Length: 191
Image 1 (spheres, rainbow, N blue to C red):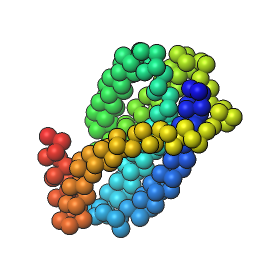
Image 2: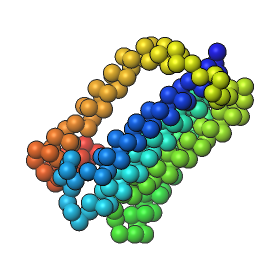
Image 3: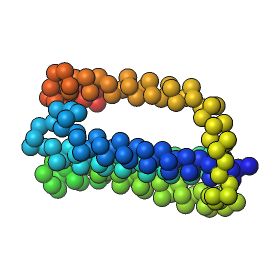
């Protein structure tokens, strides 16, 4: 039964990633038509978006592997790797900004590097802690996906609402005021 859920979620995540990749590619290609970006940093901002989208796609594909530390009651291992990835992110970000001309894409590049770092450890721990769970096409069961979606739909709605609350103000300020106003608002939210 566990293999059915494990495999079904993995393949559902692959499908979701493919759909997200198409949307992400369109967003990057037409970015200057969707939001106001100064021409002199357009390539850098597109690189930022590419890195952030790839990081999100890697996270979605490998999210099923994070069940290993939860199922074996070893959540602290995942927390330790997350702490390490945050330390690596800080070191990389500061280093890039100190060694090179500052670029907004450094944020996305460091997020991607640390996202891959976490993903690799989650795959490693899934294989080490739960060797009996295997991803195999014969275990795929669409009914398991429907069951999981129906039981988690309210969590999804809550997350989408939070995402809109956290980011829609930046988008609105960019579209209706200016890119500079969005930058000031983003900076003030960070502080």
